[in-house]
Image (tube, rainbow, N blue to C red; front, side):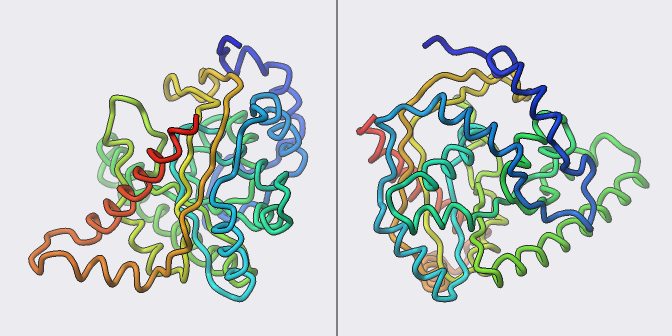
Length: 295
């Protein structure tokens, strides 16, 4: 099937989404945790169902189940996942929920994604897509840096204070999620990968903090492209049916993983935190390349 833009193929759906959307259009310290809206999720599941080819698969199922078992036993679980399109999370949750393993189906219900506030604030339609999934909203540091260049010093200070309040509230919200046995999912690159722009696949140094805050992590690679990025407007993305492969690494103990890798670096390494996440991204890339052969 020829790819069509979301705004063309799902124009009718957008109207229905708008009617059941209720997520906040402005983020502050009081609303960073946003529980999934089952009314909008119904439409996202339909979009995924329309475009998920039957040969799509979950790989590393035993790794997912081991991760789930450890979370159920009390470990604080983190998922670090590649990011290529805005259907990465919807398709992932849909495939887990419909998997033959009850453990994977329950894991899908425990996932809380870390999301940048632009998903709430930029567009009502994008907001209705995002609210289909439970998430903790943050103020990304790269967003703050870009805004500081465009505003006065006074406005920049006010925006920095807002960012601190939002991100402090987000930390507390993540703690609450962990206590409830929920799993935090993060896209370590912080943005969708754009072919020809390798910097968009580089991990953020802040991800090192997540490794320190969690007990276990799995790395999830994505092969297949259901939604092809065109520009900054998500509604212009081109969609078509695709074979999708989501694969999990073996469960990694965060403390020992981080300790051993940092110990391998030279004593005078200028930025060990960036090196740590560069290593994570290298492991994800290797895993991605392995499963690419199955497409």
